Amino acid sequence: MRTTLTLDEDVAARLRELSRLTDRSFKKTVNDVLRAGLNAPIQTEGRPFTVIPHTIGLKPGVDPRRLHQLIDELEAQDAAAETSGEYRPQTGKTQ
Image (cartoon, rainbow, N blue to C red):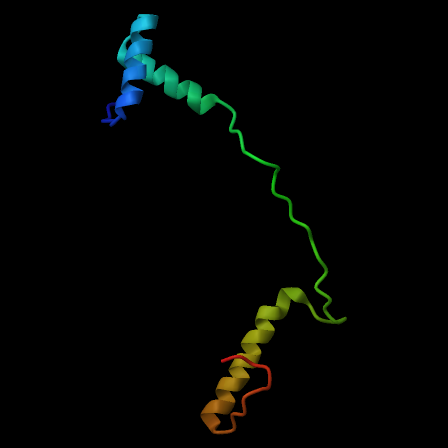
């Protein structure tokens, strides 16, 4: 595959030097160096991220998988009440 690649001057100089020392073409040197870098194992710093679960304390009978449905139903009730003129904001509800 033919492509144009812009290298920083220090990187190009190191590749030219490596090419000269190993008696390989510049193209072969670039491909070998890229291949070695891509095949190297990825190292991450620090310890791995772990999730610490916490109970959320829902009351019995509340299905956490259906909370979005409950919110939608409550919003629909509010919208219906607002359009009919019976709207009374609930306490604790942020607007």
